Length: 591
Ligand SMILES: CC(C)(CO)[C@@H](O)C(=O)NCCC(=O)O
Ligand code: NA
Image (cartoon, rainbow, N blue to C red; front, side):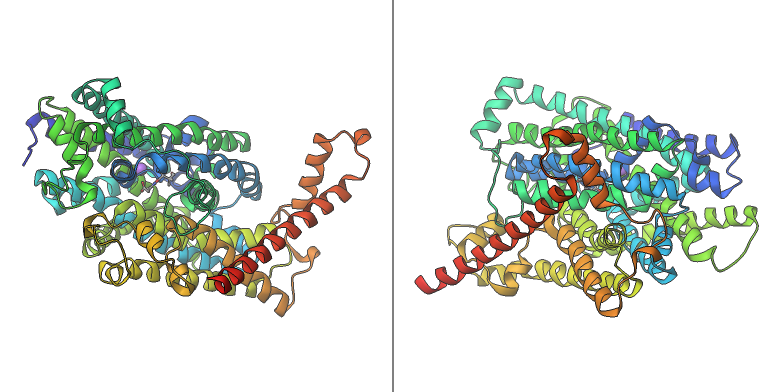
């Protein structure tokens, strides 16, 4: 078993000490964290650059650092196409969600739900968010500790407790300022660690051109897969289009991120910081995909997993680092620091946003208290969520799943319905409160039905029931292979939906059911909707058209053109649907 040298331990300890120091700095400077405004919103004075790094770091945990290379090593660079969804996934929040939330001067994003619908919807939204983040936090803190434990024998719960404790302390003491600035520092550590490993790895693989030949000949450079089948795990459509909904739920309506937008000095800077996330995310994605390729260049098809040095895909990256970097004292420590940086920056954001919503949405509306008491209580809440986080790590310990897919599935299963709830409010003035609650419930039911159904139907026992090529060993069975062998029908088709579509499916379920119930119970009239809570889709489309097409060149009025293109799009979708049904019916008859 590879081991850690003293320098490695020192580097890892330095990360924790530096993060703690940043927390203490913000506990004793500025307003000394004596108001909730400072603790939760950094006095609404943050600048664009730290915010953008922090926005990226929030949902970039050790899960991505070890999950993405493992995915690329096994299945090639197809996953890299998820980078395409960052475009719309950030443009839409920047131009629709951020301006609306910023102008409403919200105290938490769930306050929007009360302004647009009613208090009950707000509480439903808050509780759903708490559930999502608590589960995600558990995955976030457990993942790096488990990898470290499996590869170096480092004490599992020692690592969980050490990081949990440090993170809880600096979050509770230093508030959002500490969270954002530790995020900045931790992002630098994260990028440095990954870059160092990639450079040394390429060197070990015999240089750039050798490494390239190896990954190319090993078939790990994937072309764009345009297969429209929604059950194939990773295609351009599942990643590039399904991913947009995932991104919207994370970067558009998630409290952790909206809190950052709201804490910026001006609306313009909030929008800018969202734009800046794009290059940061692309760099992060590139580094982790390159890491997977470098791993392949070094090991080829003799993976340490097959040689049984390790027991799961998620231990690959750390094993690789310990294996290849043995002669570079300090580098393994730097990479472990990188791994834990990624997770610290995620769970600190989770603690702070959870403390904020619990205070602002659940406690403050019911109990009046002084500012000092409210601030103290918020800090206590951050501490309590720290304890819950460690407890959740234990729950995750009891489950067993590939971490990347697990984390992204949670985003889709719980974040998806929340996204749907916000979209229902923002884009459909007619939606009412009953529709919103019913829609959210329906979305969550759909999420857990498909999510858990999919999980169970992918379990090895049921996989073996399906007919498949007997030359496949059970190690190599990938879900798409099984699906090609026996095209699932009916419920099984739904269960085998790619997890990348969960966000889209669940959010549109909320919108659909929300609209149906709203129409049945009496839709809200346009004048009854609070001002600034609905996005004027038609008006924006018209003014965009005015800008694009000069009035003189246009023979019909812009209103007419908008209505016509809308009608045309709907007709196309309906026609396509009918065409598919007819095709299915005929195929059935002829076969
Ligand atoms: C969520 C995205 C796609 C974008 O931030 C990416 O960072 C990612 O794959 N995250 C995985 C979850 C995690 O790292 O905790
Ligand atoms: Na992170």
